[in-house]
Image (cartoon, rainbow, N blue to C red; front, side):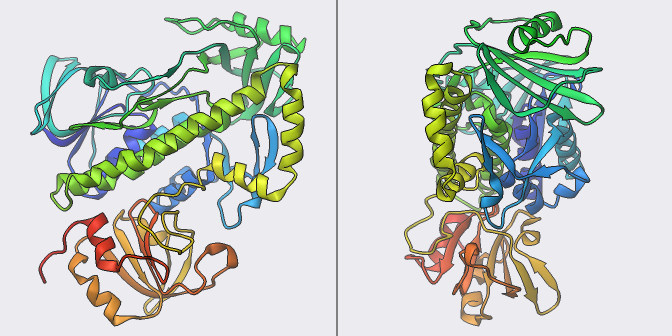
Length: 491
């Protein structure tokens, strides 16, 4: 085989997945149609959960000083994300191109093989592996891998070639996006609903201003080339009355509100992640973040199966866990689109929801939904509040040095936290020492919001979600270890 895994697409999902696989020692080839990065950035910044994920892999520092904020919105209605205790603030102005560059540099430093100018043409899954036909500068070649992962975007060629069902609704409107220089525009960070539609504007690094324009009643067009800046400037003037035609366009694009999700995230040895699996209105910048988290959920599971440490059934949990997340993403972005992009007939609903957001519990619910912090996986029954949820950052004092639950996840291995120096617990986990790190330490402090009060031990999966905790889990530790990390090795 040419690699254990072939990934098609070098966007955020593909680069994150490549890095995750390399952390586990899996050989991965990434095929990208474009000969070089475009520098274009549909996405901006990342959510609190993605900040956590990057920190758990030790790559957040690659981004340098990041401008963060607790100010967010749901469908254009302001929400203070500070109601989420113990969470990162969201990054606001990091262009997607910067995120892609840092993720590619990280994946490459780990040994990922990135091949640009290689266009995926077809695939054949014979049950024992996948053969891929690729067109590159040297002509057509065939590559073979144990698994193929499509991370090649909303128009995924992998999805089409493998015959995935992709039901949903087509676009009903068209929106323009433009990055401009040489223009002074009133900031509209969470957007402004106007009689004729919606506009958004905000500053980017390098004296660039990003605008988004949605003129109500504009039918979608299937464009082969981006819209002209003249179209964007004319729509902006019709909605706001301001003339921006003198600005210098850095980049112009268009998008719609099509909403679709595949019915299955895996068919045999072909797997989808990111926009290949789900497309939606880019409300709240959730798309790239969900794609990155798809990759983090998939990477360690695929590595364990490829290396023979876990049965194929572990891959079934990728669909089981991430398909509901994608479905909920589509639901909340559709709701935000109705609030944001509809006419005055929806104003009573906006007014009611604004009133409800004034209640902290409602604000916390919506903020957790948009930030990705609400996600809970089915890891088995129990009463512990962290079961299936992401492990919060916890400072730890060990016998040798201070560490944290975040730092312990840098290597993307499982972590068993022994918080009460329990030798019997450590003995029961010894058979998994080759893939789970057992750490004996005391919490520096436990806040009421952490969910860790009275907890003696926690098993954390490589993706940062809690798979078992004591007391409060109805199955025992060896059962949890075998479910998520495969059979123990003989000691």
